[in-house]
Length: 178
Ligand SMILES: [Zn+2]
Image (cartoon, rainbow, N blue to C red; front, top):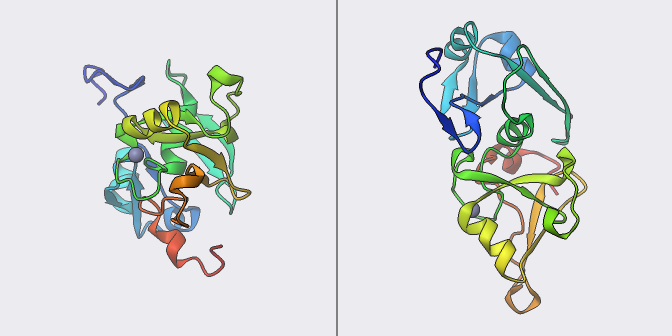
């Protein structure tokens, strides 16, 4: 990757996006998760990080992005990095598309209809799900905890899940998961 000859993907230079917790990083043990869903041993992450451009994205306990810092200026949208670290993949219920296959989508109001670009308003959606929002009565919104929900039109609403835990299996284990 240091060669700079690997090109771009969806507007970012070839980049590895990895998420982990501070506790696991400090222990130097456990696993981190890439935006493609791959588990990386913490020792490999620390080794890779020694010669990388570092971004640091911090979330609060509810998944709300608090801060994005970077060690060196890159001509790339930091917002996409935040989204890859936070959502990891398409937020549509049951969708398995990884972060690398997704575009940034405005969760509460599309920019064409006056939406803003605040980071809290953005989410990841794959191509087909972006088109579902653009071309059908389906809508998306943000819950109070920052998780994106997909709201079906009334005729298709049969009580199905509105959020996607495929890329966040840890949410299924959270004791107070709503
Ligand atoms: Zn999708």
